[in-house]
Length: 342
Ligand code: PHE
Image 1 (tube, rainbow, N blue to C red):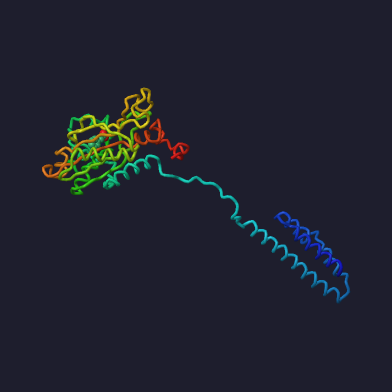
Image 2 (cartoon, rainbow, N blue to C red; image 1 turned 180 degrees about the vertical axis):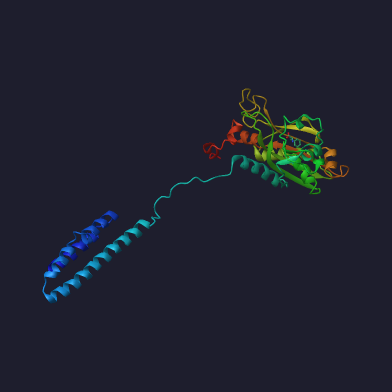
């Protein structure tokens, strides 16, 4: 009996050492505690032993059985903690990191150039009303931009009838009216944001796009300062040797008004077949002018005392020019392969 118990214990120790997986341990449990386990054969021998021996081996075998049970339990616990262990040296699973959308990047780039020139960033509201989007800006009631074909009107009851219907702003210029009513001059503000127009979507049009409005008001501001600010902007934003061209234009809210072109930074006006400027040498980027005295008056600023300049530009177009993007729709399709390039 002695020798058999010792052999059993030695074999158990050897098997425990070898067992590494949950299956190994289960096999061990069956072998040492199962119905056909050796220990059961030993128990079966106990009744045939002599009186004293019977008591001794009955007790010893029970102790042995408990020992086997706890050894196997220990092994199971050990295995569990080995599986839970984290290998800190193992290369981490790659996960996609988001980034700022290219339209936001460019909008922020534009604003930060103007911030360097002393402008403050103020956001307007996307849901506007007729007063701020049109009337305050001296846009007459019969102006085509007020037409439902050119503006998204909203079916929201208007409490203050004077403000006209609610709409999705069609440009960022209403920010001028909003700011002028709150901040008194001298002031210099840029106002970025989304604008909406019911345009047919194609490679260069979208029903929603982004603009940055800029304006400055003081007692002695003038057109030369407007030119200076814009020249500084295009040189900091596009390239240091960029030139500007002002073409006379009409906007109801500025007088005089101009459209502004930059010199083509790809061909510098030298290539007839330039893919960007088509040989013209100039690319249109914004509209500007001196704020119309009626606009100042509408916004409670004395036009006899103050003057201002204003300009408005898109964000997508400069972004397309600067980063060589040829289709405006790419900005809105949320294709990660496109977005992650910036
Ligand atoms: N709001 C004009 C547009 O959307 C741009 C502009 C702004 C022109 C300010 C002059 C002054 O086309």
